[in-house]
Length: 243
Length: 242
Image 1 (cartoon, chains in turn purple, yellow):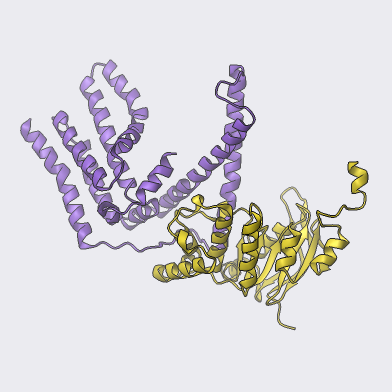
Image 2 (cartoon, rainbow over the protein chains, first blue to last red):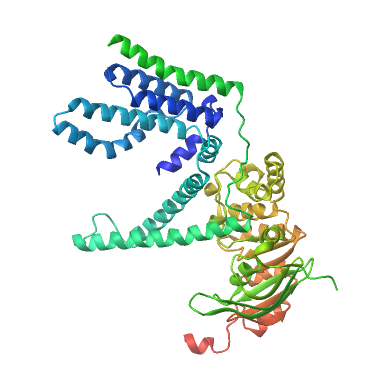
């Protein structure tokens, strides 16, 4: 599962992992704004930004190939729009959409694979993001694991009783079975989620996830934030000068 | 006689459909006691534990360490009565074992460094210090149970409530759990179907039937009285299954 892999990656011990989440959030914001507002010479800018992100991934000891593939998930959403743009006679917009969405996804992936989600959410909280939204995000993240575990249990149970993708069922029967399985999955996950919430209440949970380690913004974080923010801006200036 | 840690009088709880899950429970737990709650599935044992911690609302009088179980006292009651749920999977929800065990102390307002120290201390106590940095879902069932118990012990409760703690445990893990529980000084309430386990860890037992406590005394007396030993055929058993 994607989130399990990201969770494992985020528990690494590279210099990038050790940086304060606020510094990484700042660097990501600068990167995304620099990329999103670029209009000219994207053909030169995109490879430069890609090299920056790849360097970051390698420095963080994240498997590069696997990260590049995972970032491609964004194409599920952007390819249809790119096709529409292409068919309406705007191939430049189509390619720009694909490049920007992929680089943005890769940048976000670099952030989440070097920052455990609880630390990331604390970083968001520290920069003033609404607590209610953060709590929803935190629960959503925790329950993703619950849903994936329940799905795996159900899959095993189905396989044990002879279910296969090629089972000789009529199409409507397959649809019915799939719909029923999704319903059961959510009912089971809901039950599990309720148990987890109960266990949290029993251990004094009062609506706020306590910080196990306090955030500390050190000089190295400031240096990193400055360097990581300047790099994409310089890359863009260089690309525009060539243009 | 010492003041009871738990004192319950005429406790009732009804499910949403009107079924009486608890129907007039009277119960006392004294310091140092370890009480096994026996009875059939659905007889109200787990509901009783949940009512004691305020996770379900009951009607009647219930006091934990002298505090009435009501909304205003819930934080204090949950500090004094730690509950270990049947399914450890549901109890372990933080990314690492250490963070999970530190979750309770942090919620009690403890400083993060002190909370981590305490978490390490109880992990050592339950023999799980080596897995502190691991993700809980990578542990075996027995290890998960120990970590779940550590998560409760880290809150330093006066009373431990355990809901079917031997579920999913193999015999060596059960033995090791018995040793662990025997070594803990807290008073205990243990919901279990495992008679050997109940004998090993409890000083007395109560028997639940359809939301009522219908018997109280030594484990073996209740087992005989209610034909509750799985090794012994109950009267009529042979007739039913022959």
